Length: 448
Ligand code: AMP
Ligand code: MG
Image (cartoon, rainbow, N blue to C red; front, side, top):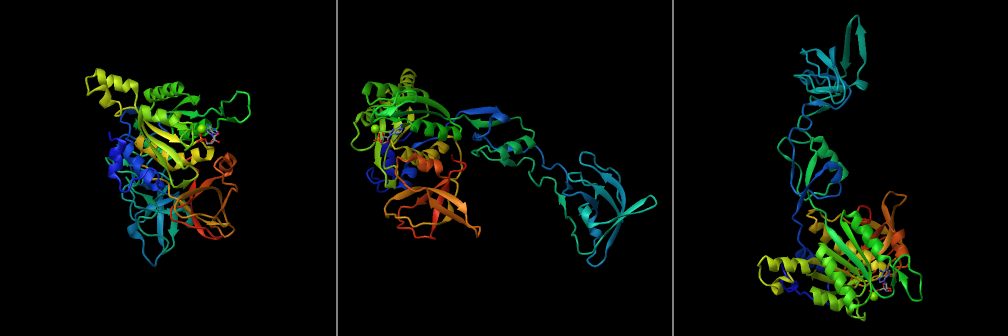
């Protein structure tokens, strides 16, 4: 496991005082590692988990050539470009009940969607294109010329999935469609990486827990609730550690307890310049931690690193590995020390923590692509930092996407986050935005 110094040495021009948003993600991707424990779970318990092994199709899907339409199946070689084709109906193939008889030239079989194609037949004419005629006991149809080509309206065996081939890949997030696909292969269980355990707490003497009486200068803790929600959406197991006062003994206890139980720790508050330095001092004391100033808005200060776990250090020691000292920075939990401002917490989570956690979850998911939308207002923006503006994306009368900000973008204004359906991402080099300019948007849907 690399120390922060080792990671810093791999990066060109690393400067903790002038991190770019891209630089932060690059650093974090080198810091975190995927969990390696596999859980084999019943399908209903796998939603949102990450596959720990390819899912191999045990058979062809569909298992037989079958009809894509309700209609009449026949041998397509009989179709002529300029002559109608007349066929006598000799039987019926139902979904779940194949037609077993033979079919001669000039004959066809009435067939339902999903029914197995009778032997030798490769084409289906949909029922709405033909008229059924009955003369005595004999039913027949006429297919007009130029309507069909051989092979039309037939689904091929193995068209969805081929036996022995990967239907799903290791590292894929299990979505509703992927659950259904696994079920269609008859699989009752899937191998998944175990969920992450994430501990979080808020810091600050002015932060009130719910239920406490309001007092002058104090604010209710909202960060634990947004972090809880964001983590839950990611399928993490959460360990809520409450509000921790700016007190060295309490902070040390909280960090130790968190590092002993969790894969990662998320704190909020106490990392900005001019804070009573207890939080920062304790992070330094207990771990390998860097304090960054990120060229972004909102969310400038952030601390990251690893907090050692007394338990893992102790068990390594008792297992005879190295020394306690050598080990103390090698194990433990990844730490994300987020700023205190409620909007900054959510933005830094979405921009940095979420991609890092997905990597820890073993997910190979690419970040969702940013959308392009036309700004319905002018936005002031200084080049040299990345800005995330809370916004509402909607469809313009001409069908294109338009976007406007939610107004005041103060980093404490959580209302702006609650009203938004996404974030305008104004990249590092970008300047002012004029009305009608296209901007990048990160949609919340799927992430929040
Ligand atoms: P800090 O980063 O600790 O200086 O906090 C920046 C601002 O965010 C201050 O106005 C804090 O009161 C506020 N803040 C910090 N933590 C929380 C929290 N858990 N919930 C709501 N506001 C907070
Ligand atoms: Mg504070």
